[in-house]
Structure formats: C-alpha cells, structure tokens
Amino acid sequence: MATVLIIGAGGVGGVVTHKCVMNSEVFTKIVLASRRIESCEKIRDQLDEGAIEIAQVDADNTDETAALIEKVGADIVINVALPYQDLTIMDACVKTNTPYLDTANYEHPDEAKFEYKEQWAKDDIFKEAEIMGLLGSGFDPGVTNVFCAYAQKHYFDEIHTIDILDCNAGDHGYAFATNFNPEINLREVSAKGRYWEEGKWIETDPMEIHMSWDYPEVGPKESYLLYHEEMESLVKHINGLKRIRFFMTFGESYLMHMKALENVGMLGIAAVEHKGQKIVPMEFLKTLLPDPASLGPRTKGKTNIGIVAEGLRDGKKRKIYIYQISDHEACYKEVQSQAVSYTTGVPAMIGAKLMLEDRWSGKGVFNMEQFDPDPFMDELNVQGLPWKVIELD
Ligand code: NDP
Image (cartoon, rainbow, N blue to C red; front, side, top):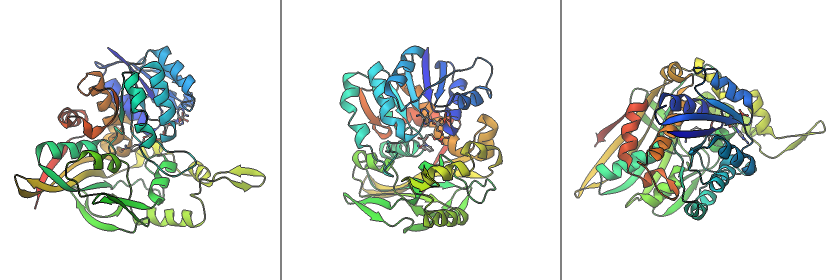
C-alpha cells in the first residue's frame, strides 16, 4: 500500500503515470501534479476513470510542494518536471521526510550547465531526515548506469573503458523537432563535448568527435560525442575505469537546423528586447516547435541505447555490449507516448517500485550504480524494456 506523487505531466510524466497504474499492487494511490492542471487532465483522460487523482502545483515553490506532499500523504515523490525543479522538490521531500526520485540532474535556468554538485550536497540533510533520494532513474542517466553496474558485477574484475551509445532512429516526419523538452534537449546538444580519460575531463568542440556505430536492428549511424551526466557519477563508482565517453546519433536534418538556429541566435537563453518586450530566444523557439508529446502518434522506427565495456576478467581481455531496443509505435500503442518518453518513464517507475519494496534502500542521496543491478535488470525485462548482452571481440 503506497501513495506516489508524480510531479510533471509532460511526455515522461504520462508514461510514469500509465506504468504506475499498470503496477497498482505497489502504487495503490497515484496522484499526478503539474504546473498546469490541463496537462494532468489530458493524461487522466487516457486512463480508466478513478485510476489517478490530479493536482496543480508550482514545484519551484518548496512550501507549496511540501504542502501537497503532506496533503496527499505521499510515500514517494517521482520528479519528472524539469531539471530546474530538482532542488526545490528535494527540499520539499526533506521537509516532509518523503523519499525522492528524479531522472535528470539539476540545471540552473540561466546557465546551460548541469552537474550533480548541488544535489550531492543534499546527502547530509537526506540522511538527517532518514530518507533516500535516487538520482537519475531514467534511461540515460538511469538504465545506462545500471548496465555499467551489471557489467561490473557479472562480467569484469576491472572495467577499463565504457562507451555509452544512444541511438534514436525514430522518424516523426517533421524537418525539425526534439523528442523531449526542446529547451533541455537543445541546451545539451549545442554545448561543448566532454569525456573523461585517466582521471581528467577533456573538452571538445560541439560535435567534434564522431564515429559510425552499427546499432543492432537499426544499422550504422553517425554518433557524436557529447557530455552526459551519468559519466560524472560513473567515474566515481566503476573499478579501474580509464576512459568513459558518451555518443548520441543525430540525423543530418536535425544537425543542419540546429546549427542554423544557433547561428542566428535562436538558442540563446538570455533575454533580448523585441518591440519593447523582453523575450528569451530559446523559450520562443520552444513555442514554435512541435510539442514532444504530440510526436507520439507520428513517430516510427526504433531506439537502441546501450553500453560497450572493455576490461579484464581472470586476467584476460573482454569486451561486451549491453543494449535495449524499443519501438516507437509499440510504445505509443501501449501508453500513448513515443519511445524516448517511454524509455525514461519506465525506469522511473521501476526505481520507485524498488524503493517502495525496500529492494533498493538507504539513507542519503544515491546514483543508480550504487545499488545491486540485478533486481532492476529483472524488472526491465518484465516492464517493457528487455535487454541483451553480447560478447564482442
Ligand atoms: P516536458 O516538457 O514534456 O514535461 C515537463 C513537465 O514539467 C511539463 O508538463 C510541465 O508542466 C512540468 N513543469 C514544468 N515546470 C513546473 C513547475 N514549476 N511545477 C510543476 N510542474 C512543472 O518534459 P519531458 O516529459 O520530456 O521531460 C521530463 C524530465 O525528464 C526532464 O527533466 C527531462 O530532462 C527528463 N528526461 C530524462 C531522460 C533520461 O533518460 N534520464 C530522457 C528524457 C527526459 P505543465 O505541462 O503543467 O506546464
């Protein structure tokens, strides 16, 4: 018997809500809250009558969020609003002694930079409140961290290199659109690249390093090195690591549009004066672009996200590839969302389930790879994200 409060009724929030309803033996009361009640109503109307309750909340406001947590009697909060709300929602959880989970690390709205520093700094207050905070329980971060922990536990004595490989081969038929929140997506992709080698972070120009990778069931795709947040925690927790990189695929049309938008200043996050009004170019662009949630019914094709790890087992070299393939149309059929939201929302529900069942427990703030990967890997197979491991030579 547990009450879950899901905050953020966007693409990912919709999937988390559907999946909690499908696991109603664990999530006996489900409350979905968001800044706009209409967003919650849209998701509520996709479900059986009475399956969920909804509420309005401004999660930038800690007191308002804490009051809602108390009112609904939440046993856990799943934060799938935007990364800007991470700290206020974490504070509301501390105030009400309620366990916390999210899928993306904190970003300041006025600075395109994300890091765990401020969330890790809450470890002490989470310990004092005797609650657990699970950070980054989406796909990447999230499942990719669990894949690394699984490789470490079952396949290696030491892992020397990890490449995280994220391919979305979905086609939505638009010349340009983003599969999740455009602002978060474009900030991430247009930033400088960064990877970690021999204890140091090495910076690259955006899209400077790329390679072609042959993704099972998708085929070869050009994949570009980006900085991605799971690397920050993995370098602390994987034994013997010498290098970790993250690659993501982009189509030519996406890259061409992004470059053109950047060149004319449309990705700017500082306000500009326009006819006596202040506007933030990136926010205006978000208004013009298709809503990611609307891409669901139009998107065809697959995603394939995984890790390639190389290292030693019993003194011998070994290289393995762990990956998960999802199909956009199958995801839409199941929960009325495309695969990018699906692959994020399912792991968020699984993380919360493991916490409520005390299969993952602790006091303080944790990243995914700090727990036993086995129960999570088992749940992935059961909850719609089956994975494979293959040996590479
Ligand atoms: P959307 O923009 O579709 O949804 C975000 C939702 O948050 C919106 O419904 C919005 O509310 C709500 N929200 C925004 N501000 C507030 C606020 N102050 N108070 C309450 N609610 C608020 O984004 P996505 O669903 O695509 O992404 C959700 C999260 O998942 C993001 O943090 C994103 O970075 C993360 N993510 C993680 C991935 C991973 O693999 N780890 C992959 C993809 C996304 P409303 O509609 O009511 O205005």
